Image (cartoon, rainbow, N blue to C red):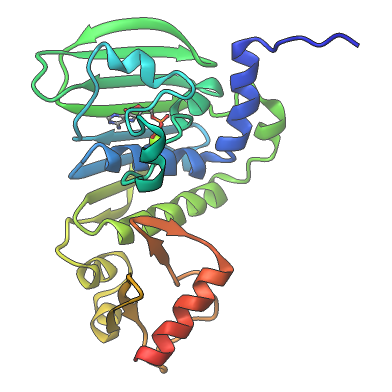
Length: 275
Ligand SMILES: Nc1ncnc2c1ncn2[C@@H]1O[C@H](COP(=O)(O)OP(=O)(O)O)[C@@H](O)[C@H]1O
Ligand SMILES: [Mg+2]
């Protein structure tokens, strides 16, 4: 038996499988980065449900030419500095893993221009390695383009579902993020066709109307209560407005959509006693 240290690119490739399971996970991570960057508008362009192309463009703070190469490295983040920060995470990301993971298993192009900078930087490459570096005029903000996800991980590639199924998974993730962040404008297109466009809204009810339907949104009952230091806010349907599955029950904790059966149950119980 010989123990070896794995080379970086192999470590990244293995780790990538844990972070990026399918196109929808990449879409979610990239949009979360845009939200963390304070974007007011996020555009998501997909080709074949994200299996061929995912492009997420935002108008957030952007990255400087010094920062951009770092963003690609594993465990590099601007969101966590000291041990104590771990107990007070205010951003969606903090591990510094997503971008490195996504780029490790794709053909990628990162373009970013920091607010106030006179020009932007574009890095392009594949399998986590930068092959091209270019200064370009760019609008403030960031655009991440991911092509041929899993091109170098055949096992993952084999498990991709049809473009329609992968698109549906991305839309589920995006709908939840849209509900969690009502003020942000979102536009999602697949194969150059608009799939979902959500205008910036002032509150959750307006956002539910924009994402699902205004007549549904108008009928939902508001809940807003704080107990034991935990605030629960949201909208719940009256008894005659039902769905056959739980797909449209969305639980958001501190801006983060979560799927947790116990938490869902507790939320439903609380809503039942309060309404
Ligand atoms: N859209 C973006 N706008 C501005 N900065 C970004 C964007 N995407 C990524 N970054 C920068 O790259 C870093 C690494 O991103 P990521 O790998 O997703 O890790 P994390 O979000 O956990 O910090 C972020 O901490 C941030 O500084
Ligand atoms: Mg992130």
